[in-house]
Each structure stands twice: as C-alpha cells, then as structure tokens.
Image (spheres, rainbow over the protein chains, first blue to last red):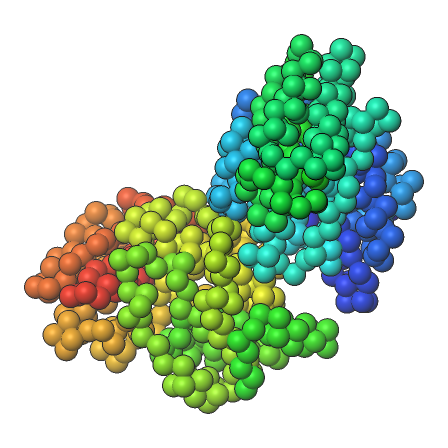
Length: 281
Length: 281
C-alpha cells in the first residue's frame, strides 16, 4: 500500500495508472476509520483496479465552535486497517498542503446547504463541497464512494458533480450500524456509556417511522410526532431536528406518496456529542 | 473542424483524443470573435494537437440590468473565422445544455471578486468562475488560453485553478489593439463613431502612465491623477475607476517598487457601452 502526502506525487502516480487503463476508485474520509468506512473501501476495491483512500480532517468544514481540534485521529491504526482491506493507496495531506494561507476559492451548492445540517452548521457544506472538489481534482477517480449516513452531504455532492460537469461517478453505500442499531460514526467514541445507551433512541425513532410507513401511514406530521415521542424518552437527548424530505429533491414533504421516496433525517446532541442518522421511508 | 453542441459528445470525442496521447488546448469565448480571440486560438493551435474553442454567452455572468440580451452574436461568422485558423473543434452549447433549471452550484474566489470589476458588477466573477470551471470539466484540456484584456478575470481564474487543484495550465496572452490603440472587444461594435473616438482616451491614459513609470515616476496617486486628466479630456467618458494593483496579489499599492510589478486598470462607459483596458507598469 502506497502512502502519499504530496499532491504532485499522488497525482503523478495516478496519472500513470490511468494511462495504463486502470480504473481508479476513491473513498474520501476524515480518518478514525470504522466499519462504515471499511464497507466503502471494500466496495471500491471490488469494483476498481486501484482503490485510493484519503484521510484529511478538513478544517474548512468545521465552524470555530465545533470539534475540529478534538476530532479523533489515529493514523497508524487507520493505515493498518486499510492495509488489511488491500487498499492500494492512501493520501494523507497536511492542512498546508491542501490550503494556501490566503485560500479564497469556495464552492457552494446554495439552496441545499442552508437547510437541516446547514441550518445548524451554516458554513459546513461549503467546506465539504470545496474539499471534495479539490480531492476529486487531485485524485481524478473514475468513481467515488460515500456513505448514506451523511445523506445531505451525499445529495449535495451528487448535485455539485452534476452541475459542475465533473467526470466522476458518485456511488452511495448503506449505513453500517453497531449490533444494537447505533449508526457507526467516528464521533461515537466521544459518548459516555450513559450517552451511548441514550443515543439508541435515534435508530429506534427512525425504525418506528419506517415500520409505520410500511403499515400504511402516509402523514409526515404524524410520523415526525411519533419519532419525537421516542427521542424524548431519552432524558438527555437534545433534538436539533427530525425532518422528512423527498429523496430526489431533498425538500420537505407533507405526505409520503410511495414507498422508498423519502428520507427521515434526525440530528441530536448527547452531552457535547452531536449525532445524525437517517432512514429511507 | 468539428462542431459539438452536446456535453456528452464533445467529452467522448476529446476523451478518445486524450487516450491517443494528444495534447488538448482550449480557448473559452463568448463569440463575436475579433483579432484578440484569434490571437489566442493561433497560440493554442501552435502549441497543441487539438485546439478546442467554446462559444457560449454565459447568462450567469451578466446581471439583470446588463447587456446579456443585446450582446453581439454571429455564429456563422465565428465558425468561418475559426475554420480559417484551422481550429479543430468548436463547442457551442445552449444555455439549457449548460445549466439545469434548478442550478445551485457556484464557485466563488472571494476577496478578488468584490473589488474593481467586482465592485461594479458584484455577481460577475462568480458567473465567470462557475462557467469556466464547468467548461474545464467538460473539455479537460491540458492548457487553456485567456486574454490579458480581462486582467482581473485572468487573475481570478489562475487563483481558482491553483486553489481547486485543477489539472489545467492557464496561459495569458497580450492585449490586441486596433491600429489607433483601442483594445479589441466584442463590445466595440456598440460604439457610435463619436464614442469610438472618445474611447481612445483609455489607451492614451494607460500609455502615458507607463511612459511616466519608465522615466522614473513611482507615486501611484500621481500616476492615477495623470491618467484621470487624460480620460476627463473626453466630454462623454464616464469613469468607473482607474486603479493600480500589484501584479502578483491584485491588491492596490501606493508605490511602484520595480518595473513590470503592477497593473494599471481602467473601466469607463461611453454612452451605454462599458469598456475596460489595462497595462503593465
């Protein structure tokens, strides 16, 4: 497994592979890898000749009051995990390698960056879209793989790729959960054991809403009400939102028109840790 | 000469050329070609295997009060001129081919898009940067050629390319002028014969400032004063700005420290027609 830290070097290496006709896949991550990330790597590896993974905790997507500095990092562990997955290449740039002191260029997917996660984190998606665009331009993969857990991020990246005519295909893979249903997240390590137990209400709320839709419920207000009831069973959950949006246009809807046409999205804080989760209704 | 109107078709064709190892050059234009554009095409053709030119009057870079609808267009004449230059490929997309109804993705080179032209035209450079990024992603050239007349545009595009890690080299070519010194521009056709004569003050002002620097003048306020004196000799010129900026960082300076280290930039309206020009001091 090759490890690159310089943009020119990883680009040169991958250009040669492309000229040899190799199919390049790419999984961008912020490291501290869990089974969710590894499921993306396995998919990428199985469908390409060269599987490239990036590890970069992107300062541009954290607001000053957020957890950039304490975001968990363990490069040695990550490299070991990727080696075991037969990953071909890891790109681990420094912040200085990725951003000039006077960095001024940002990409913005307007309407979809201000709602839901964007309402709570107003500069977040500009940071995400910008770094993903930079990484795509550096790696120039045939396809890139993202997890469904960050549903709004996945939607925004697909929209950006389409609207900027980027020559890369975006593949979205399912959420991976712990045995008890908690969606895997690098931030789960922040949780105390009490918070960890409480956080199960997120998956329970989503699961209940999905079961209701499967038995014929179509009223979104009712579904959201039921989900909130379950989340409020936790004494410590601080709910940011439960929302239902159309799967194609990511806008709030009032009625589920047909199965598998909407996401229910939830975000809540447990102590200092903010978690998100979602399900297709 | 091949003419493409569909993104998928031009991309497919150029991908095959790239896989054959051909060097692709690209000259993006808004059409109504003049000697300035053709000088870029000649340079591109001389330094590549496949010279691609785009013709697209980009709605995103015109404000509602600007001249998008009356911007001069003559596709047959443009194609004829490009054929004579042995241009290999012309891409002429419709606005619908380039932008979704619900287009939401824009790239913004913040600090440099708000000054000078950006102060007068606040959404202009966002439109320019976005369409240039889209065209680069569609054409995927090895290098692209721009004219020095739009100095701030050239600076912003180079900055965007660097900061987004785009795999394209940007070449800037000199301003081409009419015999009497007027910088070539598609908008010159708007000028009445009186306006056309008056507009010569722009080049005269820049020329005088350059001559003063060559004889030792270093004080920017004095240079700007002299330039304004000349422009005000025209009864009909409405000056937007005369400014001097550092050539490397595009910020206003008070003193010329060494030759060829600054641009003097000017913008003025003659009747309804807004013209820009610049010179290296």
